[in-house]
Image (tube, rainbow, N blue to C red; front, top):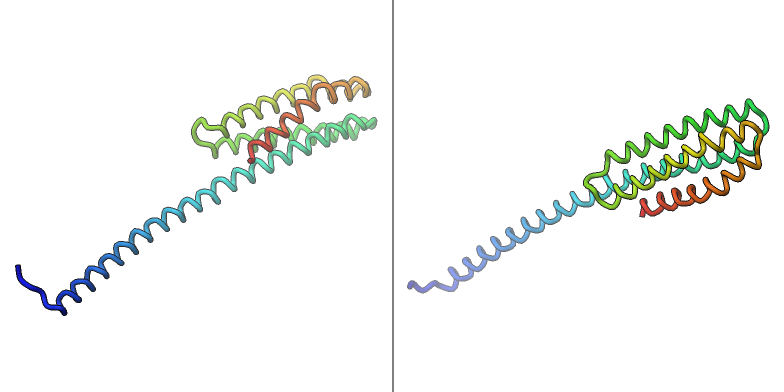
Amino acid sequence: MRKLSISQRISMMLIISVISLLIVGFVGLFVAKKESESIQQITGDSLASIEMLSEARQTYMEIRINIYRHVMNMDEPKMLEVEKSLEGQSKMLMQQLQDYRKLLSGDGKDKKLLESNTANLQSYLDILQSQLLPKSRQNDKSGANAILFEQLAPLGDKIRLGFNEHME
């Protein structure tokens, strides 16, 4: 084997050091790019999902307020106005949940929570349409209040908690 002079050894160490630094730099760049993509996915998908669920929860809370407005009202034209509002909000809420469903992938926890909340919401809206609103329209306010407090309030709290759990 040939002996290397000191200047050749130093040159070889310098070349190996530069190559090593380039390799470390490229690996670091690759890892940083992957992390950046992960952050973009979190901000793009997760925040969009949370925003969509937040809007759905807000629509649901507006439905609850309008139910109380209907039960407390004695004026038929105003009750009809509230009913139209309830109908539009119910459709909007179900559409918001359908739009949210499109963002989900797989059969994970989010999908199960959505299925549970959607089923509870459908029951809530069915009770509203078939039982509470007819009693309220007939000015059977005590009957409407009974349905409201015995059936809709517990189910409504379950739905609200479902939205909260889903957004965590």
